[in-house]
Amino acid sequence: MGQKSCNYCLIRFFQSIPVVFIVLLTLWSYYAYVIVFCIQYTYTTIEKGIPRFLVMFLLFYHFLFILFLWSFLKAIFARPIRPPPEFNLSAADWDQINGAMEETGRNRILESIVMNRGLPIETTNDVGMIRVCPTCSLIKPDRCHHCSTCEWIDNCVGFHNYKYFVIFLIWGFLYCLYIVCTTVVYFIDFWGNLQTMPPVRYNFLFLFFIAIMFGFAQSILLFYHFYLLSLNRTTLEGFRAPTFRGTGVDKRGFDIGWLQNWKEVFGDNVGLALVPVFTSRGNGYQWRCRGHKSFSYQSLE
Image (cartoon, rainbow, N blue to C red; front, top):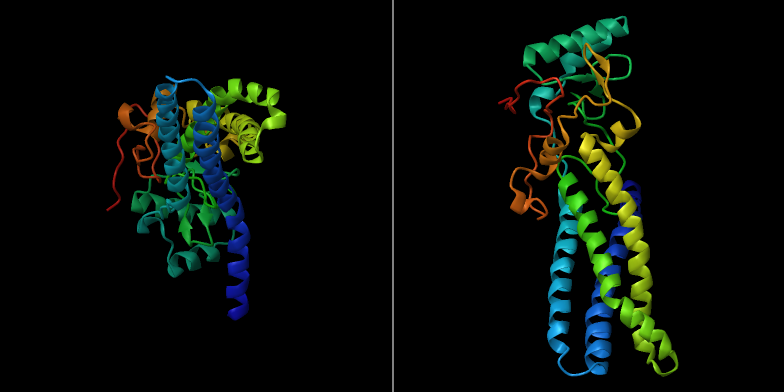
């Protein structure tokens, strides 16, 4: 038991390194922009009358900084949602499933469980079987998987935090873009006074380069998720189209139109769309499909 605990702590330590790195880098960027660039460099080297402009720099910077850090922390600490108990498989259910001689027999048992409990299951695995999770001992809801943990937030990205993850990318990209746009003129001027520049102001130099690199990396991931959002696909569905009961493989099975697709994640309140509060539609285990003429989320309770 002691060795298992030690191994778990060691694994958690290494898993947390990317998150700690981003937090420390973000705090350092605050120091480099606010203290070094805005106060030590800009305020002390330019003519009178500019401080009013400097206040605008700082106001917009803090707006982006707060929303970036807030959405990042929400993406980290939002816990995955467990499916309702109606999806659970009891020991008796497993005995019946494992007692079937063939896969088709097992699937008939699972189909009857789905029908008797009224479970909102629309998809199957690649060979048309109802999907089950032996680890969690339940019938898998549509679009649910044991996914790998995203290293940069040390958390799975799913229904519970997908909005937070996307707006983390949005605010992170805008944060980097703002730093680059507001410092580029001073960055060029920096090279003309390199010999007389105090060492502490090299923080500003590194900040410019790091903002470009991270902004570029985030933009690639962000626009890829914009693409997935517009088609209402998960990352896994982007590589492998879902299989539907009765109709087979359909890569556009959950595509209900780009506007409705975006509302599935960001909700109906435009004012809260980019704020890291939960506004996504649905419950995480029931999904509207392209063929549904009318649809409403139903509780299993």
